[in-house]
Image (cartoon, rainbow, N blue to C red; front, side, top):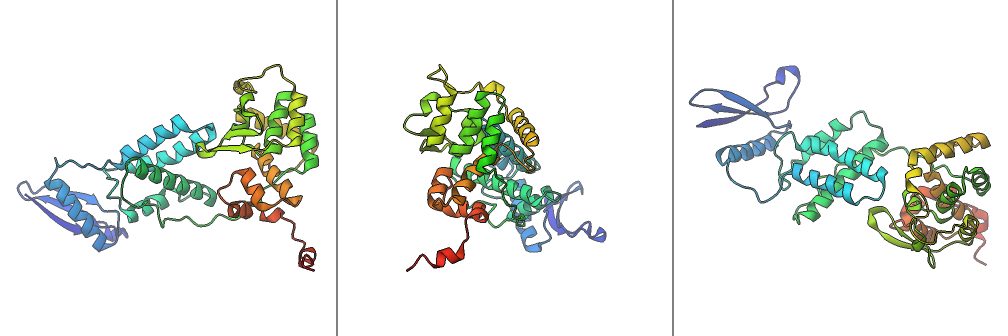
Length: 337
């Protein structure tokens, strides 16, 4: 026989979290389980659940545990993600959720939102706002995948859990003139072509590196983020770069992907920009930003640029690139005659 009660056993030290005191009335032995909440009503609900589990230890649950769900999500990411960077980001952030899931048995239909919020705040306490935002985004993606994969009729537990907004940092980009000088300094014709795919077609590094000759027929076929298929028009400038490349190969991968790890090519880019005196914080992704920025600065339609960038909607493009859109109010006001 067990007796259950709520206590704030560390109240004297300033810790107001409630604990469940479970006393064996036969042996008089006592154990405590923290509820991780200061809310008495919530603590009582947790105590009821604990009491039910203690009284029915062999009762089977049809709903999987959070630990099982997160492990499956990590396996899915490793097996399906195209980019090594995506795999690292998703698995690292999901593993932080897994650590919480392994502290106790948590069923997916019975996640304590307040406790999850406390865990998120504790896990991201010393993070930069941008890293907090990334962790929240990946936890949301993880829960969405779990809910869909297990066909659960529940809301995402991360709804309403939002980190503070990160300060907005304007994206750096290369001007068309800078791109020309960078291409001319590329160590090999393969690296020049790789840079060109990003600068003139807006491809991500992993997309460019994985290009096959078969993908370039009446445009460029791309499997992008989230395994989404897209077809992008082939620009005249990109056609010229492909003609310059002039390879005897007509099928298979264009690049030797083993020779082109992200870090190696990034270092090569930094070396070039240093030689050219381009003093900007840049990565390979700067080419993609430059693609959108230079189109918008030249007066391209934001909806068209959004489609070329494969953003879900033009608002995303506008939010990222509004600072480069020409803002000539005098000219705009005189459009109407």
